[in-house]
Length: 112
Image (cartoon, rainbow, N blue to C red):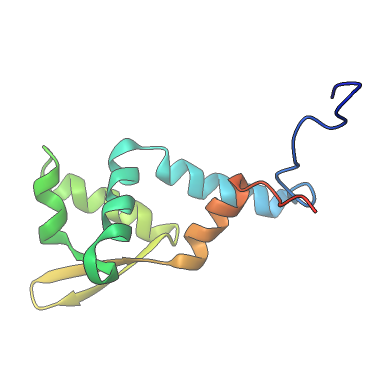
């Protein structure tokens, strides 16, 4: 805070996180803290039609299919993505409500 301008920046939250909310958000942050999972989430979220086949995701990485499956399982377990099997392939889509919780954590409140 400076003497001439008041507060230095807008607050990023309306109130401090509860212990429960902090624990839930920490789990989500831990899931996306891995570069492969973060890339997978962005690839799924930006894919045409709002969902991506696992067959479209694996070629982007120099990793084995079981490793990609593990990362997708982590994202699915924490509720960032969901999947649906269609024949031999699984199609993944982002769960907007969960991803929005992460985004809201870092979005400054608008000043009035």
